[in-house]
Amino acid sequence: MLGMTTDTGALRELTVGTGSGLDTADMVLNIGPQHPSTHGVLRLKLVLDGERVVACEPIVGYMHRGAEKLFEVRDYRQIIVLANRHDWLSAFSSELGVVLAVERMMGIEVPERAIWLRTALAELNRVLNHLMFLGSYPLEIGAITPMFYAFREREALQTVMEEVSGGRVHYMFNRVGGLKEEVPAGWTRRAREAIDEVRRRLPDLDNLIRRNEIFLARTVGVGVLTAEQAAAFGASGPVGRASGLDLDLRRDDPYLAYGELDVPVVTRTTGDCHARFEVLLDQVYVSLDLAQQCLDRVDQITGPVNVRLPKVVKAPEGHTYAWTENPLGINGYYLVSRGEKTPWRLKLRTASYANVQALSTLIPGCLVPDLIAILGSMFFVVGDIDK
Amino acid sequence: MSEGGHGQGLVKGLAVTLKTMVRPAQTQQYPDVAPELPPRSRGVIALLEENCTVCMLCARECPDWCIYIDSHKEEVVVPGAARPRQRNVLDRFDIDFSLCMYCGICVEVCPFDALYWSPEFEYSEYDIRDLLHDKQHLGQWMATVPPPPAHDPHGEASKEETTAARRAAAPGAARGAPAGPAVRRERPARPAPEPGGAEA
Image (cartoon, rainbow over all chains, first blue to last red; front, side):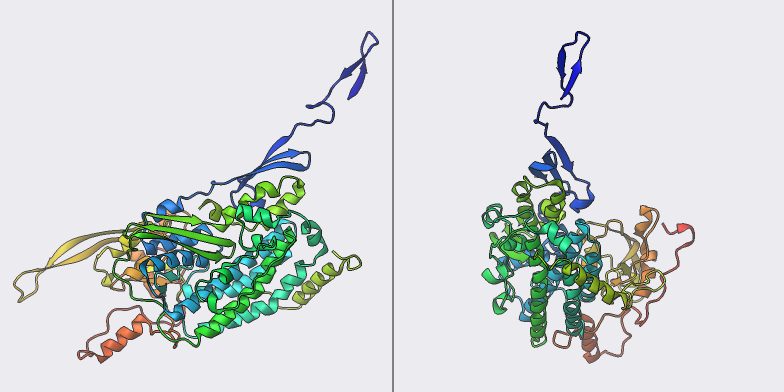
C-alpha cells in the first residue's frame, strides 16, 4: 500500500498489485508434460499460493498408445511384445501377467522348471527396476552419485538377462506355456555370481544415500501418505507398503513358485518419501535372496521349459482376472475371450496409474521444493500410467 | 535424523567415494573396444535367402508388419517328370528396422530357418529410409550370426542338437548337411556399407 499526496493536499490511497491487502491471487502452474523432473510426460496442474501448493491435479494420457485396444487385434504371442512395453522397467513381470491369464484360461500346466526360472527372472527384473529408481530418485533431488552406483549394479544384472533372453529391456522371454527357450549352459552359475556381486556392492549405494543428512532433510516427514489414503487410492507395491499397507501378492496370493518361498514383506509405517525409498532399497536385498533361492531350485529340476502348443493358440470363451506383484505394485489383467485367436478385451490395471492418483491428496499443502521429492518417491513409469 | 550423529551420513558417503577412487573404473571404452555380446543378443535380423520358401509366415506374424515380401512363381522343367514343377522365387525381402520392435517373432516362426538374430547393432543411418534393409543387405548379416549357445544340461537340448541327432540316426545320414549359419567363434567386422547406398 502506498500513500501519496495529490495537488489538493489530501491524502489519497493507491493500491498497487493484483490483489488487495493480504489476499493474493493463486497462480496456476503446469509442471510438465515436458519437464525434466517428471521423467516422462506426466503433467501436474498446480494451484499455488506463493510457495505452497493449494491443489494438484495429475493430468495423464500424453503417452497413451492404446495398448489395450491394440491387444484386441494381436494374437497372444504378439501381445507379449506390447505388454512388456507399457512399463519398460518391469518388462518381464508385465509379460508374466499376460501369459498367466492366458494359461489359466487355456488350462495349461506350466513345467516346473519354467515356473522356477520365471520366478528367478521376475525377481531379477524387480531388482533392475528398483535400482533404476534408487538411482534416479536421489538424482531428482540433487544427488548425482547414487545413479552411477545403481547403474553399475544394473549392468551386472542386465548382462545376465541379456544372455538368457537376448534383450536388455524388452526381454520377450515369456511364452504361453512357459519360456521361449532353455537357458544357456552355465547361465545359472553366472546369474548367481552376478547376484553375489550386486549383494556385495549394494552397501556402497546404501551407505551413500540412506542416512545422508541432506537426503534425510529432503525426504523425512515429506509427502506423508497414510495407510487409509493409500488404500483408498489403490496404491500398492513399495508406495503402499511404505504407508503400512501390508499387502504383497507374492505372499498373500502366491503365483508362480512364490507359494513355496518364504517372502519377507518389507514395510514401513511413516509413509513419507524416505520410507518409500527405504522400502525400495530393502526390497532389493529381499529380491536378490529370492532370486538366488529360485536359481538353486532351477539347478535341481530337469525337464522342459515350455509345453507344446496347438498351432493356433486360442483362449476358450470366458474371462479371468490374473494379478501379479509387479515391481511398482499390483498389476491386474482382466482377460475376456470369445474363443478367438485374439482377446475380446484385455484390461490392464497398472500400479503406476493407481499410485499416481494419490498425488492429488499428497501434494496439496506441500511446498514447491518438496514437490519433486514427493513426485519422484511415488515410483511410477509414465508409460504404465497411460498404457 | 538423530542429533549428534550429524555429518555421519556424509562421512559414510565419502568413505564410499574414497573406496571407489582406488578401484579400477567400470567404464567400457565402447567405440574403441567392441562390447562382448551374448549370442542370443537381438541386434539385427539376418536372412539366409536359400532357405526362404516365401511362405509369408514371418510377414504375417510380425506385430507391426515391417516385413515386405514379393515373389513370383517359376516353372522348373524336371527331366523325366510328367509336368513342370512350380517353385517360388523371392523377389523382394525387406525388413524396415525403423518399425521393427525386435521381438524376434519372425525368427521364431520361420519353419525353414531362413531368419537368424545377429548381435550386430551398429547400423544407424542419417536417413530413416536407409533403415529398410533389402534381401541383399539382410543376407550380409548372415556372416555375423553366432552359433547358438549350448543349453543347460538340466533342460531340454536345443532344436539344433535334436535335429542333428535325428539326422545322424536317420538311414540316409550321409547326405549333405542342410544350409545353416557358418559356425564362427569371433565376431567379424560389420559388412562394408554399399557405395553410395545403391542398394536402396
